[in-house]
Each structure stands twice: as C-alpha cells, then as structure tokens.
Length: 231
Image (cartoon, rainbow, N blue to C red; front, side, top):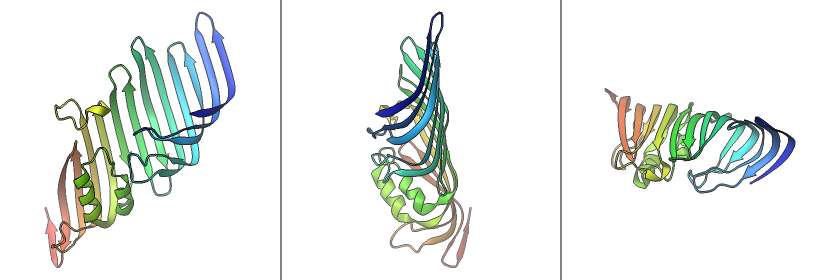
C-alpha cells in the first residue's frame, strides 16, 4: 500500500481526535480483495470511532483474481464508519458506488473482524448481457454453471440485479447453512441457446436466481422459432 498525506491533525487529551487528508492512495489486489489506485479522501477519528470518505475518478479496480477482467469506472465513492472494540473492528460502509457509462454498481456492507462475518447488499443497473457475462465470479459460481451461462446467453439486456451475502467468506458455499449467497438477475429481450441441438429462444424475459452454488431459471415470455412462449 502507498499514500500521500496532505494534512494531519492530532489532539490527545481527555479525548483523542485525529484527521488526515490523503491522496495517491494505492494497493495491490490480494486474493478476492480488489486493488485500487490514485484515490483521494479523508479519515477522521474520535476516540474509538472513525469515518472514512474516498473518491476516485477515471480509474481501474483490480479484480481479475475474482472476475474475468478488471473494472473501469468514471467515479468511485466510498463512505464508511469504523468502530474499534475489545476484540477487533467493526466496519460499516453505507456507500461503495462505482459508476461509468456502461456500469453502475451500488454496494452497502458491514464486516466485523471479531467473527469475520460479512453482510453485503449490491444492486447493479441495466447493462448488455455481453458485459454481464464478464461479472460472473470465478470463486462464487460453479465452474460448469459459469461456462454454461457464458455460452448459452447470446444477447439481450440485464434490466437489474441484486446480490445478498451473509456469512464468513471462507465458509462458502455454506453447506451447513452457516450463511447465504443470493443473486437475482433479470434478463429482458434476450436470446438463449439451451443446447446445441436446440434452436435459440428469442425475445426471452427470464430471471436467474443464484442461491449459494445453485441456479434456478424462471422464464416469463419468449419465442421459439414461430411459437410464442409464456408462463
């Protein structure tokens, strides 16, 4: 990790107060922790509570350990609080937004070092299916499922997606019900090829529901050659 400290203020007495403005913050990707660079922000601390705000402009997030490729953004915004306690630190991030012309992801999460519990909610706005396929995670999606979806999904639009995570990262896929990973992905006007021996289904509206390593597909309407399909 590296950073440039622009302003630092400390007050030590009956209360502890500290603030620091920083720029040119960067760190490398480690496992599934993304790498970031050229960030600016501010950290303020009062006794055992801290607040971190971070901004990035026209940058890159290193996530190719988890996804097929890194993510590029026009703007990155982070706003979170830290609470130190006897057994560690609790982190509550109310804003972790990544925005670009083709990709808009809004995240909220909390993490406690005491029990390594991560609670996360993400929403992803509309994007082409061709781009969606680059966001299928390597570690949290069965390899055969990922390969099938990447091949079967031909074209169309993802209208929205929501992701929910509750549990410890190293306990996935939660075979003992010690956590849950859910993702709901809504596809509209898409083209899907279920099998090489089947014709393509066009004008397909379908929802993909990922639950841990399982996948359910619920279609609403579509067209198979000259036959209109419906629920």
